[in-house]
Every structure is written in structure tokens, then in C-alpha cells.
Amino acid sequence: MCPAYATCTNTLDSYYCTCKRGFLSSNGLTQFRGQGVTCEDIDECSQSSPPCGPNSVCRNLLGRYKCSCFPGFFSPTGNDWVMGNPGRFSCTDINECLSSGVCPEHAECINSLGSYSCSCRVGFISHNSICEDVDECADPRICPEHATCHNSPGSYSCVCNLGFESSSGNVNIQGPGETCEDVDECDKNSALCGLSSICINILGKYNCSCLPGFFSPAVWTPEKPDDFRCIGNAPRHAEHFRWVSNHPET
Image (cartoon, rainbow, N blue to C red):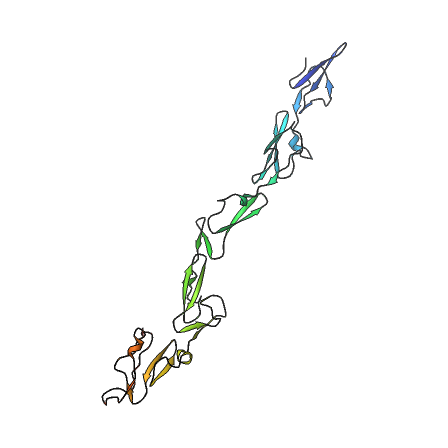
């Protein structure tokens, strides 16, 4: 009597057919009867005003449609919505950065609409999807002259060599403007070499020498400074000056 996807309603002296929800009669009438009329599926997704909200996709089904959130979004009422559920279907961005382990170690997670990205922290570089430490000390210009570079995870520091000190007074230095200046050991300690001797400052080190008419039986070394003593009546075959650097020559 009625075609598929239609409901038959009896009247006092006749009947009529009505297409079910999600279908439309082929003759455009809401109520119809007779042969040749069919109920055709309505493609809700192709309408000028799509039934699904932003950040979602509409999929037409037989007699109905389905809304699904785009990847990176979720719906508080469930990611898949079908006609008949109450309320407007809305898709909200998923903040992937709130989950642990999204990005590799030493990386920061940056959330974006429907997605996210990972960025290696300063001092690290991306390689094969991991953040590897940058060896800043591989650059010979990273530290000032007379300094040694010490690499550390994600950073580095410059330390002035023995006999030098930083212009800022800090032990660990980095960045432009820092220099390593010679330490004048002789000026800091007038009794550095002992009595009857003279202290001679040179770049990065100093020398101890006996005054004329004095000699030391032992050569001065940083390890045994007390062995260096200048005494009078230097023998004729003895040198008037005995000195040694506080740093071995290289």
C-alpha cells in the first residue's frame, strides 16, 4: 500500500502515506497515496546550513546523519552524535599538552587549535624525534681568551684559566662582554716570594727571583713554596736569580 520508509495512516474512507523522518516523498507531498511514489533519503549534510557545528564533519546515513569531531577535538556529549540526541553538538579543542609524555624529554609542548607541536628547549636540538644536547663548547669562539669551556645538559659555562679572573668577578661566565683578565699575584701579596726576593708578574703566572747577593738552595715550585728561601753570601758559581713559574710551560 505504502512504499518503503513510509508510514500508512488509515482514514474513515481511505488512507494516506507519510515518509518517515529523514526521508522525502518523490512527488514532494507530505501526505500521498497511489502507485509510483517513493520515499527518498534526505542528505542533510548537503544542505546550505549543515546540521553539525564547527570543527566537525557530517556523514549522511540512510534516513539520518551523523556528526563527528575532527581529529584534535572532542565533544562533551560524545565524539559521535546521531540525530535524535538532544542538545547542540559542539566540538572543543583537545589540549594534548595536558597529557604527560606527549613531547620528548627536554622539549616544550605548544598547543594549537586541533593539534599541537613540540619545540626543543634552549640548549637542545631536534634529531630523530628527540632533543639532543647542543655542545656549545664545540665552537672555539664561545668563551673569551684565557678561558676553558665546560658543557652541561642544555647549557655551558666558561671558567677563566688559572692565573686569570673574569671581568665580572664570577667564576662561571657566559655571554658577550665577559673577559678573562690577568691576575697580578705580586700586587695582591707583596710577601708572595718571601724575604730578599722579587716577585715578577707575567701573563697568567708569576716568577720568584732572589735579589742580587742572595740565592736559594732549592728551586721554587708551587707544590713546595717553603723550600724557596733567599739567603745571603751567594757563591760565585751560583746564579744571582733563581725563579720558576707557578705554571709548567707547555
